[in-house]
Length: 321
Image 1 (cartoon, rainbow, N blue to C red):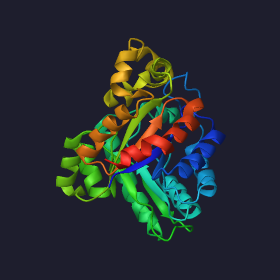
Image 2: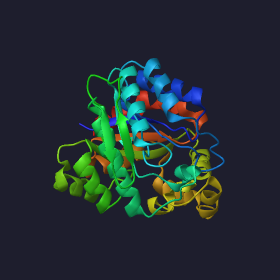
Image 3: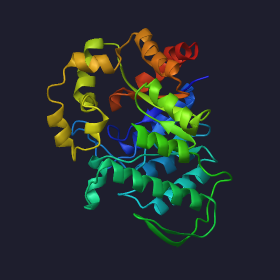
Image 4: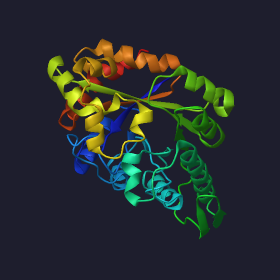
């Protein structure tokens, strides 16, 4: 049965509210949660981007049963993979084993800040593969030394580990990342309901492993207002992943999305109060073979309305799928 999750999206939400939102999502009956790991928002209008790992530490203490997950962390530029391993292990301990480490090759938006440049996708995937190898070795609890093409580790060891190593999910968008996920991940992550990606992941060794997706929604009693809000805060997503990975700052996303219309957004993001359209959008993920679908509500000030409505109407309707 597909599980339905709640997205704590730091790009649009103040840090303290992320925690209260996760507590409310747990009480509402969401099956799991995911948390974005950004240095920048996508657009200036979103206006936030607290440190995801500090948020996760607080969430691990504030919640009791809700699974937590990064969606996703890039362990190759802003962070060294040995540091990511320590962060993930600590959140695993604090949460009592409720944490999954979602990893990806990253976006220029968040990783350029270290000043080391933004290489081609092939190099980014090479770096991610080495990073996953390092993280896996450190999760075993032994001393690790590693000499790779991109990363070195000298006698590192983690002393605080959960009883079981955190599962690792890897975000995919094409053949190279699918191979990497099939070889190294416990789960696949992708943001579009692409059944072909799911099938290729299964054929290359991922059969039976969880598949995570994410759907942006903009619930509100006034559909026109919801469409306006979705256009204001979510237009950055329309150019697609290959553009999203390359642009360097929120101003670039603003320029790239100026001509996006409300109708364009409404074709991508369910807006308004009609439960049926949300069920229809999620059904695409279910039919494509996704085991987990995380919903992200557009607009920080509308989170609790969305969570309350989800508890009353949306989650019961989705579980009938």
